[in-house]
Image (spheres, rainbow, N blue to C red):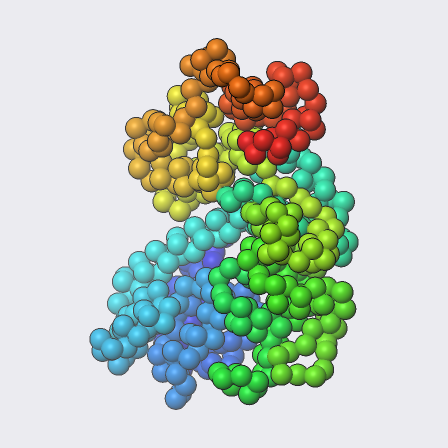
Length: 447
């Protein structure tokens, strides 16, 4: 299937000749002015553009800025009869893929467009993979099946969701799946990191402001809560929000209305709130760092993203997904991993969880010179590989005089977890206790 190409030039003769030259390889659309070009670009969902720098007095740079605002992944090639170094540098800095001069060399243009087309197809494949991932969390382990079941039950409700778990466990993917499978999926999905900006800036980003309400407020801004109206707002790292702003968020959650800074008028908003944190909010509440009433308000549904070591049976599926993703990115054709690599990855500790696994596979795909990833390109620390065959209960569980039952129990559970590669189900079976009891003990002993 041919990709769509929009050619924008104010000279009709050039439009005709370029259409004739390119229509065998692309589905070509033409426009001789900015207004029509924008309409075609939006209506036809075009990602590949050939744009003249000057259009009957219009500025090609301004048009390119508008096109990229509509579609940030668009590949735009600028052309001009007025070439100079300044324009070339400005074009590339403004987001152009390439800058060519008239009269156009047909062979050079065809080669350039075919290269851009291959790049575009690579983007489309990656987008397709990531779109699939937003609707399907990779894994068939009991932990992932439980998460999918919860999402199925709550996706079309307005319940506030709190997603907790270690860094790198895929908490945002869970949030994306809730949104993309819900009845809000065609409405905005907006994410903001509460730790990424100071209090005052975060407040103005969330609630908006009126022109002149503070220094630098040169125009009215409605804020992202209202921008997300009808959709979903993800508050990442919610534990980092300061207490004063927490109280304003609590008021919004109670009243379902938001007010811009410097305004006396409140606006009703229908938005689903999803919060993410890698901290224990119970402990934050006890330490006085998080409001207890806000905690109960956002913790209507709690989803715990499991660490990779507790869903190690999903490893093979994750590895295959990342190999496919980076095969596309690096134009490689890796088929899989060797048995030795699989064993090493299975016994790896994954302090960074799925994110760390992705980094390992990304690097291995890039460096691999054969069809299968072997240990030579794995580049993981041997000290982080748990060699369970070398662990002896007698060597590991040493009981010292003065130790109490709880200290010994902690050692036994720690040993069993390591022996079973941190698989909770297998560990519970080996210890002869229920999985629920094991979860309680892990939390009690901070294992």
